[in-house]
Image 1: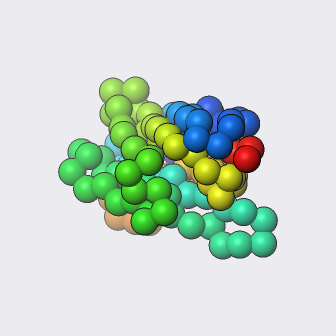
Image 2: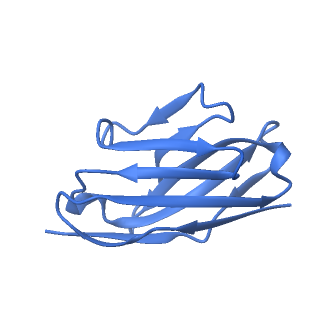
Length: 118
């Protein structure tokens, strides 16, 4: 079983920065892709960024390219999302997701609120 714990959300001014962390525990060896998604009430959850286990494959939503950076430290079983030049439209609950190599296991974190004030 895999458990994810997110941290680092909060309130920041327009143009500010935040770094989110997601620490994984449990059956770490089965995890391949880890990613960050976000959701606003009344809208679908959307991909923000995702990274493969070795870091060779990284994907970003077009809306965050050039502003957000996803990284991963496998020694610490942690994935990070560095968010710079934040905008009010980045306000959402951010969720960490882990996916196994077989895609048979998908785990979500509890979510962390990011609020960007204009």
